[in-house]
Amino acid sequence: MTNYRSSPQLSRRGVLASAGAGAAAALLGAAGRPGAAEAALPGRAGTRVVVIGGGIAGVAAAWLMDGYCNVTLLEAASTLGGHNATVQLDVDGRQVAVDLGAQFFGPASHPIYHKLVTSVLQLPTVPNALYNTVAQYGVQTPVMVSPSAGRPITDVLPYLPGLQAIGAVMAGAKDLETRQDWDTTVGEFVEALAVDETLKQSLVYPFVASVNGASIPQAKAFSARAALALGVRPLVGDGAEQRTEYVNARDGLQAVIAALAGEFTTVTALTNSAATGLSRNGALYRVVDAAGRVHVAEHVVLALPPEPATTLVAQLPGADPLVRAYRRFGYMPARIVVHRDPVYMPAASTDWSSFNILRDGDHAEASIAFQQLRGDVTLYKSWALNRRQEPEQLLAETTFRHPVITPDFIRAQSVLHSRNGCDGLWFAGSHVLDVDSQESALVTAIRVAAKLSPLSPNRRRLGTLPPSPVIP
Ligand SMILES: Cc1cc2nc3c(=O)[nH]c(=O)nc-3n(C[C@H](O)[C@H](O)[C@H](O)COP(=O)(O)OP(=O)(O)OC[C@H]3O[C@@H](n4cnc5c(N)ncnc54)[C@H](O)[C@@H]3O)c2cc1C
Image (cartoon, rainbow, N blue to C red; front, top):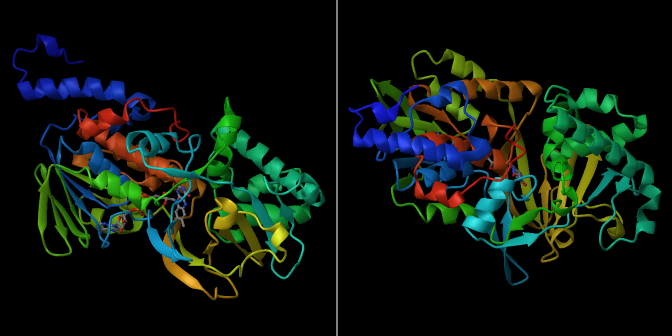
């Protein structure tokens, strides 16, 4: 172990770097447990870093390094945000911010992200009431309707078997969470449940598939813990009853991105600037963007999804193990539509919930009713890849990619962890850690910044990190 005090040759810069490592360890808390390769030397003030990908992971990484490193942030799209995609809609003369992609977060499922948004950035949030109806296409009576504030308990008594089945799913999911079991698949998990077979097919599988944007056959191969993590985590641990709420950002999650990017001082963010080339010469990386500009840096942070990341890392010599690892992260398309007609809602309006799941053969897609969710506007946000009908009053439409979050997807993350920081190449993004969420994306950014910019002002503002379920 280096004894810095006894080293007469230590430069002032070296003192700063070693002091930074100590400060970083103190600030980092539990989130900073490094993998072996992460124990590389910390970055120095003024280090040049290129961050590729301007979703929450890339923007947060850049923000956390701001004021300490010289960062170039490259984003392929015309705006920063990635899956943080907010549209401003005029609904009955009122401006409403609707998140097409990520939308929900909460103090139990997303404690660090929640702290960033509400305490550090002090952005307004709106509370949500999340409850479910599960119905079958062409069948009037739902399979399950869950209780809610506006629904007398007597109304849901007919759905008691369904509610008990979901109770069994949640109890099993808590157990997987407690045992940190990523390996049991949804198929294995559901088959082992003490639940009536008809309910497994008509309720449990559609429920699990829809919350992951997957078809039922796809969902069966998912890690059961991963598939249920975001729903069950508020129920795990002490004081769970106080932590069950989810919120939305009042002005949409792009307001979070805008707030972070609005504070950039030593970050240059370039949109419409996909990274197309990546090479290394000695200690320096050269990143070429779509406009042909060349960006030279000591460190590169890959904060883009695995599919385009594979194309970039494949250009580096000796990248085969990384390419193989990246190819283990499967993705599938998701189509989101925002509309005003209740085309995907249950037949009787008394059965409407905030999250409405409709099973149709092998598919089960959800429709979020904003009037039930937060009472501010009549609007629906629906997954609509395999629906029989299109909505009549389409206000917005987009496509994303959802992860195919199998046990092997989770296992592949360990390859990225073991190589994080090797030769100045870093990995960030929700695929790198735990399940697909704002929290996991943010924690990966914090881990990178802890090494590259231990003394940054913004990392200090984030302060001590609350315990997070994404950190084992
Ligand atoms: C419909 C939907 C609903 C969701 N709901 C929730 C939710 O309620 N709560 C929650 O916590 N999570 C939710 N998620 C998951 C969440 O959105 C993601 O986990 C998170 O936003 C991923 O952030 P990221 O920065 O890792 O990746 P991304 O947001 O995918 O960002 C990656 C960026 O890289 C850019 N890029 C790609 N190629 C290149 C290139 N060559 N050069 C430069 N840039 C490039 C992309 O354009 C993109 O902007 C949802 C996701 C979807 C799709």
